[in-house]
Image (cartoon, rainbow, N blue to C red; front, side):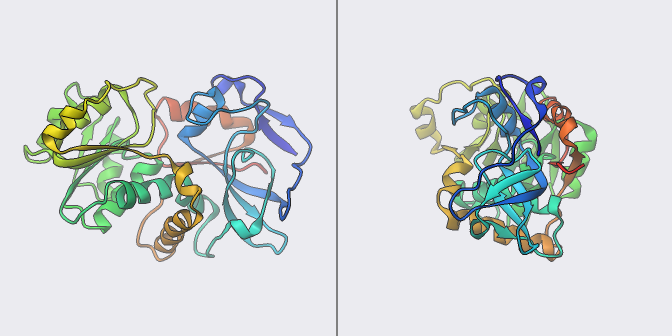
Length: 317
């Protein structure tokens, strides 16, 4: 089979296409054709070995696939790695059937990014009706779904941030009430002004550094900031507990691995999102589809923030 395999850690240049043996199936597993694979920002950390879980070389990156099982059914699955390939080994009983009304690429929006958005709002921040929600990177894979879910679940106002006019326009199309430039110098003031001078209740943050610091400062009393990424690769200022107590605010970490370790939690989110897509209640934003030979370009697009929506690999192309 053809697959992306990295033999040294680094940037997009390490993503090399190789001819490799088919994977060996474990107990209850089958080797199945990969119809589509998802690309996530965390994959750029995986290739650097700079994320929360340490990696071992050689490595086939990617953990998000749509496969065809021996009965011809399309199934969606989350693997530890090995997704950037023409074949993957998995247990069909641990995968999600895809409704006929949902395309392969649309299904991929529900797993890592969709389930992250779902649980950030439901499980981590416990969004309440009428609250103001800030969605950073609103045109990205998590952001585009989070905007729609927040409005569906009763947010009083959704404020999206994005780095270009086109991206901000997309967030407004998806239901954001206000879209602001993520590159403003004083993000705290911009967020408060977007909320009519008041602090905000919920922030979904995945950049780190000054974005984290200024978002925390924009919280209203009893506000919650959920951090689910480190895209800026710059750590925020350490959080002082007294500062949190003074305004009764909270900082909540989120890593989807802990949801995946409780399969019923992952299933609840993915099943709900599949249904919402199938009946047209939410609009999944699918970006570019890449061949295996072009995966490095996809990683560069994620890192320079030029991508929109969910990026997908067609490994058979």
